[in-house]
Length: 633
Image (cartoon, rainbow, N blue to C red; front, side, top):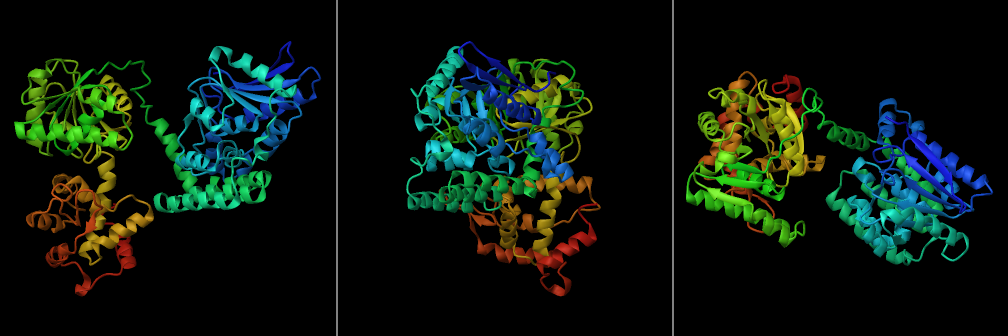
């Protein structure tokens, strides 16, 4: 692989073209940053250079700062690994250059890449280039001047929105907002950028230092009103993420004290956030998300994924309908099978509601929604299964039922068809033991709601072929999931991790802690919902089935709470029927249901684990759990 480098070429027109070369996205690794500094210094010295164009090789400007540098800071605890880019390079070498600098942007300019471009005196872009500052997803803020220049180029409201959401815009949108000065074809990009740079030098086009602009900021009172609204939104949507509030604070500092002061403040806060626990966690997630597509013995042996054009889903309940929705949104034809017309119609209506809900929320066009729904067909038998490439079974957690289904599928489906189960806990060797097709049996465990939640747990048995896993990984990416390949065991990876959490919650309740307080504290910790509201959302049938599987596998460490059975006997089934720990009304938020308190008291009476019948203080309960190690052995 070629080493990162920065090329430098001066044309007969007197324009120096500085090109970042670090495939695939020209990440700003340390050698690139050093090379840029040297090349800009060289351009400044040379008398034959009239103007400068900054660009990237291979149809991409730059994907931003090399995140592995921040990972190295986390590993060593030494922030000196972070170079001074914001002042030394962007301000001193680029923005304050005595020679005009134009960014020629193609493909993408993200994070530090866009910040370099904003330091230039103009930006010419190719069509459909992606422009954005996604740093907040890594627990940090833009660190090369982005918090100061973006508001001055496109206006405060749009800049705040772009940074807080981390969503990119296209070069066409950037042209409309003022971030991009011109859009030309890829073939004409360098030629147009060279000419633009020369015309700036000849004063035929404006020489703009964006850090000094104030015309798009508005008055101080207007700016503070925008930032007040942003802070309120951050407090509501991201109360546990310090980088969100810090970003707004740094933007305000620059508005009040000037752009250069804002740049210095940004650099200071950036370095503080890089070593925060939030940044460490989110950067770990960043690398983990990229590592999941690399499975030893599967993705490194030269296998090519087969096309999955037609899939079947067995079961149109909550999970089955969600899985079918995800598949048709990925442009895969789907056969939905149910056991009777009533259940089939309900499943189809659920899928239609899922798709139409995306349209209402502006996440899908009506045209694309209609196209997706046209790929769906409901059936009551296996007649349409003769040419399917993939079957995903999504029936209740019943071993004998699943074994029967897989026995039928083996006889009906073509030999190449992948036979997958959406089981959340059941050992797949048990599911497929009566078949002779165990090499094409795997788990495809989705999470509710399946058409929205990004995780897809792919379970591989000792007999599952590598080709099947490659195909499932590819399908996962097509339907915009994060496919994670795990081994075959009770609970697999997710539920084996989650089960002690759920067990601990039930233990706390039966020790006298208020159920709603537990949910509230878990939410305050940072989870989107607590364990009891989650149980309501998933449905009690899943919890009962999961508990039975874990009880069989880990009988020596299971806490058996009668609470769930008592809730079911009282006619509750969580969100499915509108009554659980919470009350669910159409269009409203879940409300704690005080009428469950007698049921909880009955559960505590049956368990009889409260010391001397008294409620245990919350801190004592945590200590109790740690001392007994009942669940974490």
